[in-house]
View 1 (cartoon, rainbow, N blue to C red):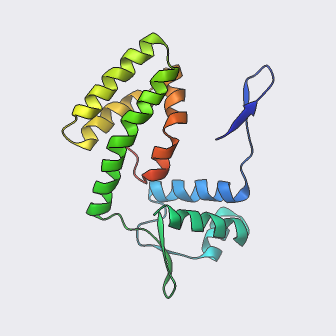
View 2 (view 1 turned 135 degrees about the vertical axis):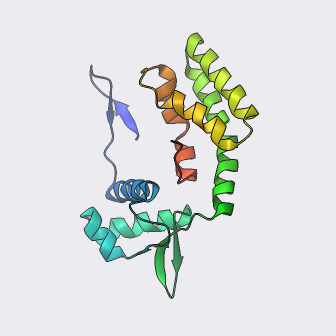
Length: 170
């Protein structure tokens, strides 16, 4: 979420537009499986689910379609995109490229100790036999509660990864 300089307490999150809030909420629900692959969705159903008017839901749904989370067919309506084996393969190939890049960007902002940890993670991700083995090491670092600068850098630097992939590493 974008932030603005705050008072003595640090940075203050900027409020999201209603369309951005709807998009974020619906994307989370798709990623969590609350909106299932293949499920047909309507503006009215989503507006009721989110407690919003149709306009921000319409904008959010257009964005979800443009990013591949949903599919719109003029004659059938809109449904949540199916995750076919080919789509999952495509997503992981993309993440294999993006995640080491995100770690490199985070390393540019990190202290020396964190930089060594990140370099180790990059080597393991690039050498991973399968995308998921590299992701497990990455997610163990990024989900840690160390509070290090790298964790916050990872969050900032990898936001595009989250948009590109509806599957989260566990």
